[in-house]
Image 1 (tube, rainbow, N blue to C red):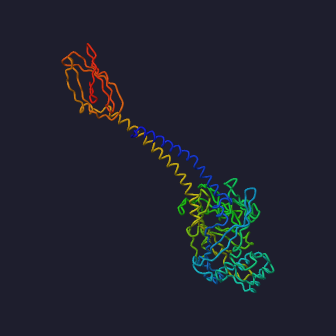
Image 2 (cartoon, helix red, strand yellow):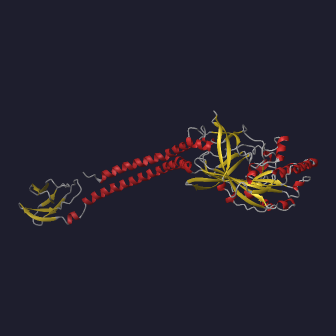
Image 3 (cartoon, helix red, strand yellow):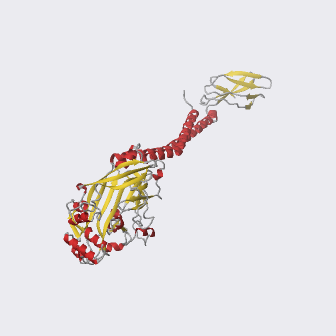
Length: 562
């Protein structure tokens, strides 16, 4: 038995209504489910295998690329000429990081120490650790500036000591020794008779204290009670603030430990973090949106005020004594040695710094600092932290090793710590925290769209069915082409018989009244009523009313009388 269009219209209407209802429910419930899923995967909880493993062992490749500023004219520098440097590198080291001594506390915090090891990657490097470069000797030139205001007999004694241990103003040594330490009789002497004066008790190297070390004890919030606080530092080495700087604001420990941030970021969000190596809190700002390996990201960069001096940016007055903008004086947390941090090649710094050294060429693509964050989860997908280490050099009276060196903040090295999520970790992250929430978000619109389309189709089908019925009832061809009328003389009065084509496709009945006056008789022939059915299987009754009598006769089923 065929299903009528009206019935199909009702079925489509019900299905469409259910689809719209489901989609509407998902619109309101979906975001709640997605946010709840993100919260569960972002909080620091050993039960969350994915996020906890990423936080604890950092199973993504991290590299440190080191560039040396090789001094071309050391003798001329001692005569007062402008330094000239050539960049050498990168010398790339694979960096392994892991957390140990992990302890969870009742106040929804967790304490840990993060350890790090470095392994040279020759295949990624331009050169080898055996390459020889020339850089300033921090022990000589740094100590000379530190002793600048001491009585001249002490300065003379210091100069004599340098000569005794054959220490000159510049070092020409292999990269590996400059990085991780070299033998020095002066270092051995100072460690034996003046312990604690140097940052390392063994060999002296630029990164000697970094390898096989930790960054101190961090205590951070787990986010289990408030996801907005996840990864934020509660204390570092038991301290709520440091005492390196001259203002309370500059001494504050703000933000996270610099690896992950709270979720649900907006373009108004910032990335605050505490860096033990820089001895201060720093904050990156939103720059632009983007896509990294198919995942939407926000890019955060260092603002121009990050290393601005107190004159250009008053809140940084606490980090002074300051020099030109673009330099951070870290001497207070580096044994008072005249060391400054900046962006590589003095990028975004006072242009006057570029005039003091030949061979520098800053640009944002190579020397800018950035972090690409997935805003919904606060997880970094691509990180590039670039910093430069500089030493203040100058002539110091009564210390002959300083010669006639003009005062200059001398670039020594710059390094880039970079990392990115890749491989199975990236696939798992994309599936659990990006694809599934995206599917749920799109599903709500798909159901609403399909539901509305189905309802529209049901309405069209219903109206089409009604129009078909109407056309069948009033089609003029049923009266003009199929109708054949014959005049018959029946029993002394006139009857008009009409033949109708049996072509109706619609069932039902209707009443109609029609009168006709014969030309030959005063009788009035009236079709009082007739009933029409699709199958025309019944006998139609003809009622002819005259002036004198009623006559009822039967006609064949394929005829209608009128």
